[in-house]
Structures are given as C-alpha cells and as structure tokens.
Image 1: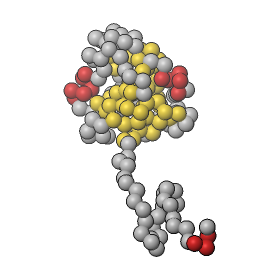
Image 2 (image 1 turned 135 degrees about the vertical axis):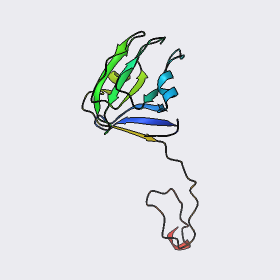
Image 3 (image 1 turned 60 degrees about the vertical axis):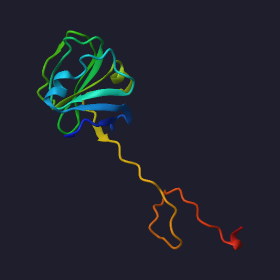
Length: 153
C-alpha cells in the first residue's frame, strides 16, 4: 500500500463526504501493534489506517472510536461505531484493512457497508508562474492575468 507513514485523507465517494484529512498509515509490524495505544484521544479529522488488518482490539485504550473495515478495492465491508476500551472486534473475513477514526465519524459522514472510499496522499503543490508571451501551454483553470492591449481598455 503506502510504504511510508505519511498522512492520507479518506473520502467517501458514494456519499461525497470526507471521513478524515490526517490519517496515519500503520503498515509496519510495529505501527500495527501500537495503533492508537498510548493516545488519550484522536484529534478531529484524524485517524489511523491499519494495513493489513481484518480485526482490532482496544485492550489498553483510553477512549472510544469508530472503525471502518474496507476490502482491497476500498469498499466498506464493516463499520463499528463507538468501539469502547478493552473490546475485541472479531475478524471480518472480507476486510483487508481497518481505519480507526474519532467517535461519531461514521454517523457524521453517513458511511455504511457498500460505500466506496478513496484513500490518497496529498499531492504536492507546485508554484504557478506567469506564462511567457505567446505561451500556449497554460491550463484552462490557471489563475494567470494576461496583459490587456491598449485597444481593449
């Protein structure tokens, strides 16, 4: 999936809503083992994406959270709202990974089984420079100002 632990965003394409903007990817043995342990809460619009995983536990956790289970095509195959500390979420054999999100995220985003999610990194923003006179390779939505000739004023 994503080799480095960079943040990703999670978007529900079916409902056209965001679940979170700053989700950490836990795709190493240590990252999956730790998950949310040691945290007192999840910040709004954040979370942890555990890859691979089809079940989770909250032994040692200090707060409740929502869990979204997704398959390899990012289709939601299970949802668990308000997973409490010292709980075991049994395996969902269709799930390839689990996204742990702040409590009430599933309700707010209206996410349900069957929804299709998009998970991606933020694209780096390039700088926009003014085009050279006569440059025809300018994107249609580029915010550039073109010089106005004396006859058009």
